[in-house]
Length: 578
Image 1 (cartoon, rainbow, N blue to C red):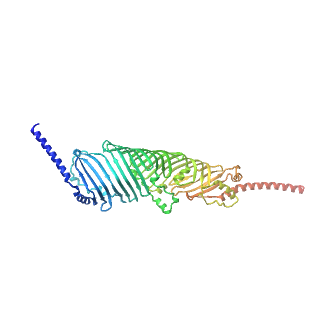
Image 2 (image 1 turned 135 degrees about the vertical axis):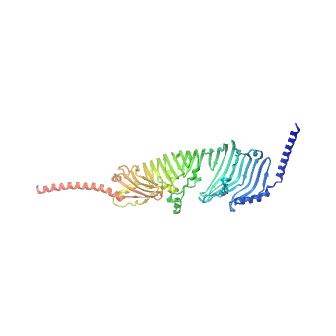
Image 3 (image 1 turned 60 degrees about the vertical axis):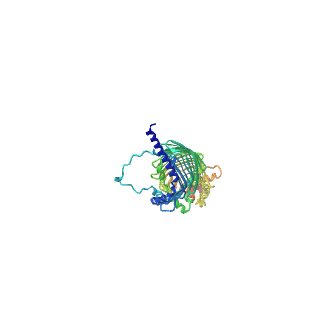
């Protein structure tokens, strides 16, 4: 080895030894805790917030540049209200890769995190000031910046434990919280794969909710695009899901059972059952679909058993497509109350518009009405078709804006709260001119019912009112028709039903019904669904019956009088010898 090279290597070695020795001495003698006061002062000066580092700051310089910090709190601007705090945090970056613009992080860990995020009535968050800049330099003062080398991030793992986040929306008057948050990941880097573990408890103030979520699975990062395949547990629900977090977001999920009412809150009582102040509150209940505007996703969902707004469904299959503020759940299908349901729902968040097309086949309507609408007015099995649209900024506004059509075809059922057979029996008394005590009766007695073999009706819905003119009900004793309105917004009915009596002499009361055969009994139904009353026009019925019966009797008497007069004339002729 020649001398210049030898001396050069010796010199380089000496420099390395000196550098390492210097770094070691610096690491051993440098105390970052001396600068805590200065750090806290600068934080106050730059942000108007109070930063307090109660624990020790520990630094490491080799082979990684790292830090451990404990007992940190950071307040809101100009306030002593705590914004964020944590018990301990650790992060370290490998030194040598920094020289080539690579940030290779050994690990990041955080414990005891507490964050309080507030959205004010003006829409600003309590961290908005941290995102704002003091102003940009004038264009003339800007200098051309050299093209930066892309920075490569590579994190060995992330660990978060014993953490919580609270969220307050002052405009909506709502509070949410994530508690007992635990997160563990593997490597996070380009084209990296790893395992994921997550657990938390989610809470809501009103209506009260506490839900427990845990999941684990595998993920892959490709071009900033996160794909995952996970198994999760949400309270009593078991979930298997695959998803990709890159627009459009894609997912495929399978859930064994899910009770959405637990998370949506109990369905509101019908307006008639509410106190006046509750009715007013319902009228002011906003419907805000703006959150859907930012969703760009498509996917498929399967649920073995689903409960939503009281409805119980099974074998649910649905496809979702969302983009530009428009969301379509189409097609979808499910088993529903011994029958099936299929159709499509489309929501346009840009104008708060909803359209619904549903076809229910061979369903049992009684349980549907009881579970979904808390009503017990109708029994039967058959088909229901709905094609409706609505729009509005509140629940009642949407009810008033409802338009479309509906069709009902039922068989072997009953109308509850009214017994037309009993009314027909009382109709005979009405023929004597007396007023029946049944007028103005309530339909609240569900033991009273009118059985039917078939019920068919179509409705035209306009501005929240469903109008019907073609009611056709068939029963052994009568045929029922009618016309009227169902006010969906007010949950009320105004309907005139007309029962045409079928002539028969069979069975109990047959002769009495024969006397009424061919006549029509008008029955007026009016009131709210929960205070519905009916009136029977017995006087009109008696008048119609009297006209037909008196006419027959007069004819009979005239015929008898004519015959009697002829006999008198014949007798007079004999007496007079004529």
